[in-house]
Length: 152
Image 1 (cartoon, rainbow, N blue to C red):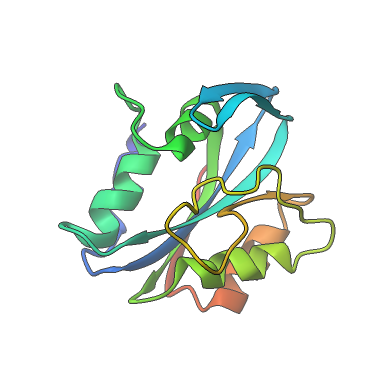
Image 2 (cartoon, rainbow, N blue to C red; image 1 turned 60 degrees about the vertical axis):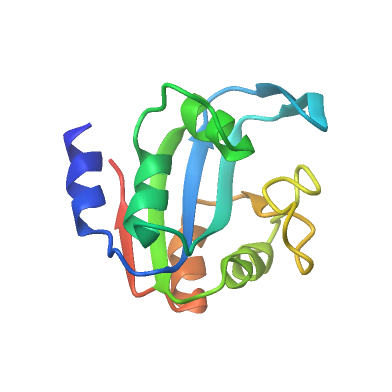
């Protein structure tokens, strides 16, 4: 957890967009809202989100990185069950830019339409299943991430 705390300290407070990758070592059965009785297969997932509220990127992305006692958003179920692989931020950026770049990776697919994108009119989902870990740095570069971090 000390690496996560070190990374959280480096995240800017400004508003913007963030993206992160999580690896599920086993399938995850979901029982939340419209995602009741669906399963995410094991594998690598990329999520794009935004942070325009109090505390900006540091508060929102930090919440996703820290262990949770209460699962609030759909993505909390994934981050609680998986292992954080990498995270990146774009000041004043768009989460849809991260999602579009993730979907451009070979073999990328949308595992659950509507997941994390209930307030978005542009994206079919904000959760993307990736084939390769090497795609993560390509997503950050293509989206113009100003900072990114790898978790060991």
